[in-house]
Image (cartoon, rainbow, N blue to C red; front, top):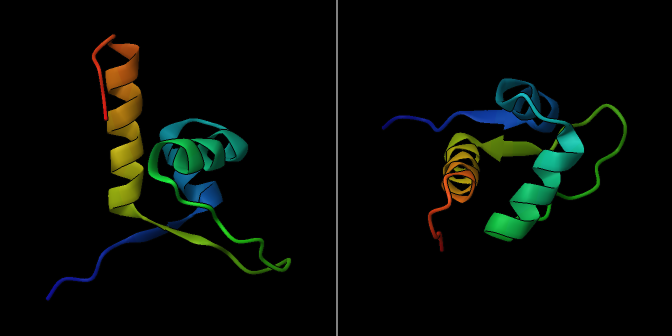
Length: 68
């Protein structure tokens, strides 16, 4: 059994080359994922597959193709 990789919001945003607030907004709009507010020093983790899904949706939208 393989464990799924998770990223912090800042790590995921850096990898994608976007601002963390933009990624948070995309997760909410495209996937209905609302990240909880966390105390300073803790992290909300995002699954790798959710990052990939957002990238796919955004890539399709830029290309003019319809998406779900």
